[in-house]
Each structure stands twice: as C-alpha cells, then as structure tokens.
Amino acid sequence: MEVDFMRIAQDEHMFDEGKRLKLSITQDTYGQPVRSYSDGTATKCGFEMLSGSERDKEKMTVAQYDAIVRIPIGYEIEPEDKFQITKINGESVSIDFEVAAPLQRGRTCNRILLRMVKP
Image (cartoon, rainbow, N blue to C red; front, side):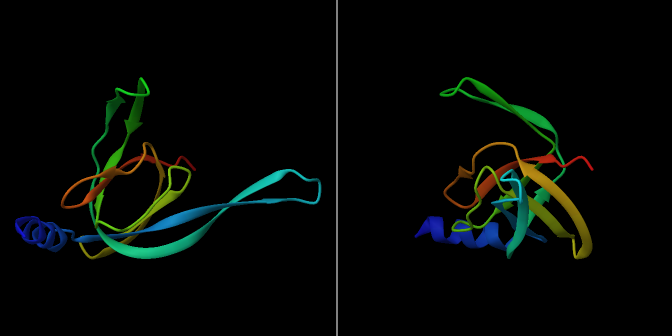
C-alpha cells in the first residue's frame, strides 16, 4: 500500500514528456538491412541532462550516458530503440537519444540511461 503512494508521488513529479522511437528493420532492393524508427506512445517523464557512466557487474561492461529519464512503471522500451524528449518543463523540444543500457526497473518508477544521438 505504501508503495502505491510512493508511485503516485513519483508520477506527480514527472514534468517532462517523451516517446519511444521503435526500431524496425526492412530490406532495400539489394537485400541490405535498412533501419528506421517509428513513433511510439508518448509518456510523461522526468528528464535530467546528466552525463556519467555505470558499470554492469554481471556483464562486466560500462554504460556511458548523457542523460537519465524516469518513466512510469509499465512503459516499455527496448535497448535497440531510441527515446525522444518532446517537452521539458512544458516547452516543446525534439531531442533524440539512444538507449545506453537496459531499462532499470524500480519500485516506484523505471529509469533509462540515454546517449545523445549525434547528427
């Protein structure tokens, strides 16, 4: 029951918006793979532009990231997808990020480590 109140509080402190950009791979006329991304469902989120790195102890890898986004529990994103920030504090933006590490599941929200997409 207490976790429910914590989730509600977490949810109420997500002032930004973003959406999943889902990867799909097709083939061109020469049989070569072509990657494209389609818009997914929008969600409220908590966006923080904060770079750093985290070590995965099991896989012995280090994830370098440029931002962290908190998303509601139940919102799914895959490591091969991208995430686009569409609003920061109510202001419309369009910033694309790659997923730098698998979704981190928490009790009150989930986190995604993001790496900025270079144009």
